[in-house]
Length: 135
Image (cartoon, rainbow, N blue to C red; front, side):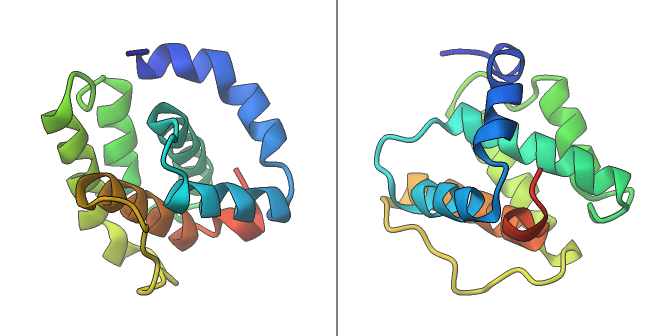
């Protein structure tokens, strides 16, 4: 398993490039919700990049919003196994109410555990205008 920090360095720039248009971001979000083989580490990178931008713009939910989740991610508190991954999903889900425009009908077609984490990630990204604004 690759660590978040290594993935960040390896793919941050290429990831930004491949998600440079609204159509690319919409397709990526679609794949997040439907593709059986999906890189969760890349998803965490995209979330961190989006949270970073939203923080600069004052749209991340305030002092107890996604900046807290991003800091815990930076400290590797979500690394190590299924329990930590569950903590990340729970922390993201708890803050959904801090965002505007989170669609209620977003749902993954995958199994319950995998589907839940992807659904929550997609809702966070949608609530932060990922498709329209980008990273």
